[in-house]
Length: 111
Length: 113
Image (cartoon, rainbow over all chains, first blue to last red; front, side, top):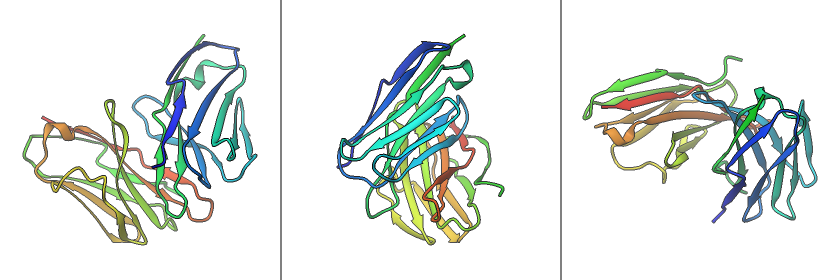
């Protein structure tokens, strides 16, 4: 059974700091996704990572994938208040279209 | 591209009533997923379709829940009869076969009183 673990589940940090959210998964996968969810809103796609060593960046967010370690990271650089949200990683099951979701990391960035 | 469109955005209903949630997919997306999100259980996959065919409904809580996809662009999720424990936000999402991305609708917040 594919399991996805995110840590931390809750993170409070100051503006201007850097931090990393980790996403570990238990079996092989060919796709990894990062989503953002603001309170009361839908899930917004941030990154799709499809190969070992993939790195994608958008603004202050950078995601990477190490399929050998079964680990993805979402790195936040010089955090700003607007990045406060819950971040989810999701892993694709090989051979079908389902995604297995992490529990989410609630990120609060204090001005 | 209008995105994945869900209706209604909010639904308040009395226990025992039938509830129908609707979802319109993005044109060209061929897979449709219904999710339920609550604080206690997080995001749960209820059912997904590929090319209008239900592939996995193991997440459907019980027989009170049913889903249909009558054509390539539209799906419904029905709860009959509804119960207070069904209160949640229900999302549908569609998958873009070209870039493997999944797009979520804005969700339906269901409250059963």
